Each structure stands twice: as structure tokens, then as C-alpha cells.
Amino acid sequence: NAGVTQTPKFRVLKTGQSMTLLCAQDMNHEYMYWYRQDPGMGLRLIHYSVGEGTTAKGEVPDGYNVSRLKKQNFLLGLESAAPSQTSVYFCASSSLAGFEETQYFGPGTRLLVL
Amino acid sequence: GQQLNQSPQSMFIQEGEDVSMNCTSSSIFNTWLWYKQDPGEGPVLLIALYKAGELTSNGRLTAQFGITRKDSFLNISASIPSDVGIYFCAGLKDSNSGYALNFGKGTSLLVTP
Image 1 (cartoon, rainbow over the protein chains, first blue to last red):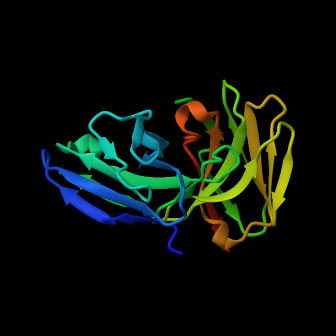
Image 2 (image 1 turned 90 degrees about the vertical axis):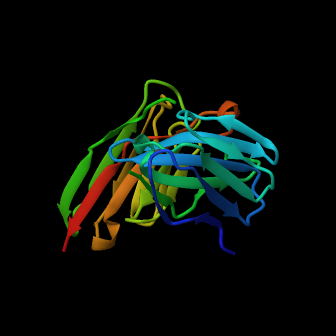
Image 3 (image 1 turned 45 degrees about the vertical axis):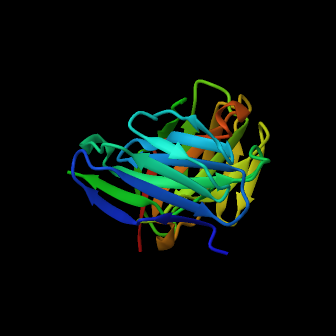
């Protein structure tokens, strides 16, 4: 049981390049989330999904797109990377119960945009 | 999202000392959570609090959900070197945000042997 996995673990991009971060969970969770973590800022919600085929904006969605084509996968895309998107990205998932169910986090993807 | 005010920002203590950190908010949360993050890893849940006034322990960790539902604290007793890491409080409001979490900025804990 792998839990929540993220690929890649680390990536360097040039300004304007695009990339997709992949999150996969094997716990059959309905809810999935993408957060970014910056120094001194804690974790902030980018986008989330309450089920396959549905996505919604979080606190800091600009510059990102997401897709949830399969229940177990949640993709985060950067169409034109900017230096301000240098951050550590964490994916999380939780069951349908949500309220009294813990969120499980992946190990993170470290992104550097030059 | 609602910003949580977490303090202190960092702590540098000796092994064996007790630690206390807290989190406050101007709005009400239905659930308070405390996470620990080790370097290069994702946050891991330590304690979850679901009811106002609730006091919950997990080994050397004790956390309380404030009566007003606007604050929570975490205590670590008899600290050990492996307690080193960043501790985050997180509040969960309701289903309108897909049960997403609002995080504090973290308390960085260093423990010297």
C-alpha cells in the first residue's frame, strides 16, 4: 500500500516552459488536493477535487490547471512556468467522509523555475 | 483562505524540556489538526480534534480544541531529538471547500541532545 505518491520528486524549469505534476493514491479516496508550500507561508490550497471528473479552485489557483480523469490520479499543470511558481508542491487525499477523516500527504515535488 | 496565527515561529530547546505551541484564528473551525513535517517529507498527522474543549493525547503529545473553536494548542512533554521538525496547525471548516485545510505558518522545533 503506497498511499499517496508524487512524480517527479524534483524538477528545474525555465520560465515559460510547461510541465505536469502527477499525484496518485491507492486508498480509493474521493477527495484530492494540491497545495504549495513556500518559506514562512505554510501550505496553501491551489485546487481540489471532490470526485472523478470534478475540480475546483482553492486559495491560489492562478497559473495552474488540474484534471481528475481517474479517481486515483490528480494532475497539476503549469502551462507557462514563472519564477513565482518556485515552490514545494504537496498532494493530499481523503475519503468521502472528509470531515472526520484525515488527509494523507504525498512526499512533495520540489520545483525550481529559473 | 483564513490564515491561522501560529506561535512561536521557532523554538530551540534542550532534550527533556517540555514544549508548547498554539494556534489562533479570527473565525471558527469545526476541526483542528496538528501535523509534523520532517525535512524533505510531507506533513504527517499527529492529533485531530473534533469537539470544542476536547483534550486529546498521543504519547508525549497533548492537544486541546479551544472552547471558542478559534484556537488550539499542542504540548510535547520530555522532548527528544527526533521531535525536531516543523509543526503545523490546520483548521477544517466545512464541505464548501471540499474539506480543504487552512494551515498555520508552522513552528520550527530544534532539540539539542
